[in-house]
Length: 281
Image 1 (spheres, rainbow, N blue to C red):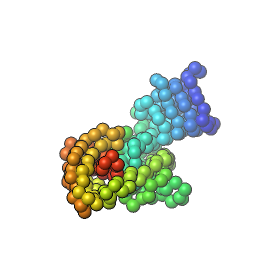
Image 2: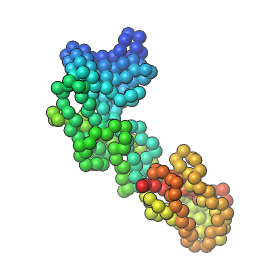
Image 3: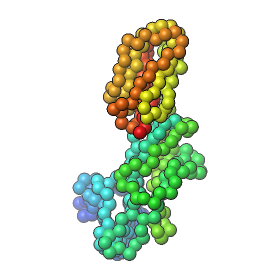
Image 4: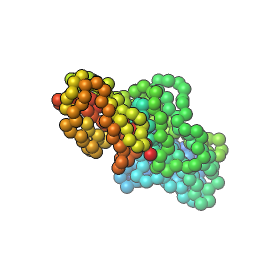
């Protein structure tokens, strides 16, 4: 049985596969239990378990959860197997940066399971509309659970819409692909010339220590430099810097800054130019 874009509100019990049946759910919203039982197969993909529901496999069944939102990780009981192949919702991703990708790639067996074991996973990307996939990681034989899959190096990539593919494989030769669409934003948010200030640059970028903010000034004038995180929380503010005519360089450091993407803003008489700085450890 195949179902697409439907809702199970729990009024009729849980949503399950049974006996030797196969269910493929796509785009479903379930507010009760999602369960495979007896000797069935349940593929729960691109869907959501809400409320107090959970996803579980019992008896001798197989449950495969792919790119879905679940309150807790799927469970494998008795002689069952549960797969979890999931790219967590990324935050803001930027071209020409190091973009952390989190998720899960594992296969869990119940205590009496005769099903397959976990073998490996690998992460790929492609520009939306292309046909080929480019590896982000090599093949990894270690399971990952709601943790960092990779730091995706997007240097040299243009901004636009991309697809990430998390490919999970078992010891029987089966593979499942979790596809997630992401948008790479331009690293430079605004490099418009502000009055007499131009050529804003940050280096090294990414950085794990100090970094330089350089810009060109047409005249000696007062500027302000601010450093914030993506949410807008201010980490640093330097007011009343008198720039010199020509190239100016100001050195800052990353003390107390967690790995991630930050916004450096330079202001001149109320006008702003911004550029992103990537902090790595």
